[in-house]
Image 1 (cartoon, rainbow, N blue to C red):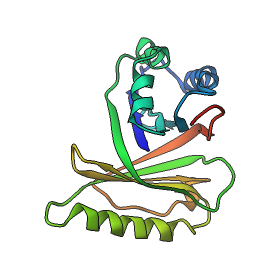
Image 2 (image 1 turned 90 degrees about the vertical axis):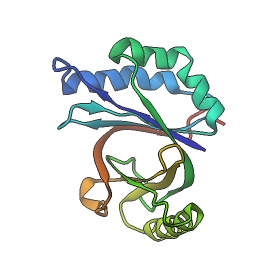
Image 3 (image 1 turned 45 degrees about the vertical axis):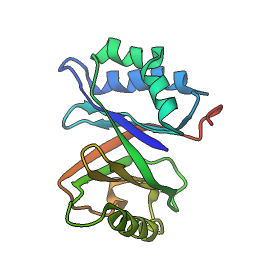
Length: 186
């Protein structure tokens, strides 16, 4: 699997109502999108950042999305954003069954002092322990081998239930809408 995210700083005249309308009008276009396993519409109202997060079956499906009219709709509305991608090392659901309302991402450099495989095994063990936490909807361990960064992304039913994280870069988002195992997806 491949995780992908882009971030758009919204124009000053783009208010919260407009981002909700944007998500409502665009979300239905993804029904049956080939290879899309999950999509989370993320928003940081304080920073005015819209940051959709995708989980694709593989890199080919992600590439096809970037080259088609769905992504062209993003560039027509917001300009062409930089798109980040990560290898999915682990992805599992927690005990929460209701759709998440909060996502926290924590990104850290991978130290060259330790083997990457050993670090990922430790992160997978921590991942398994976290999966029992009440309020956790899903958690994933990601690896960017271009920048040698690890990402720990957690989706929660509420911000209050989230386990605090420490990392070089921590981002918090409101989940405006989410889709899981979409119809027609591989």
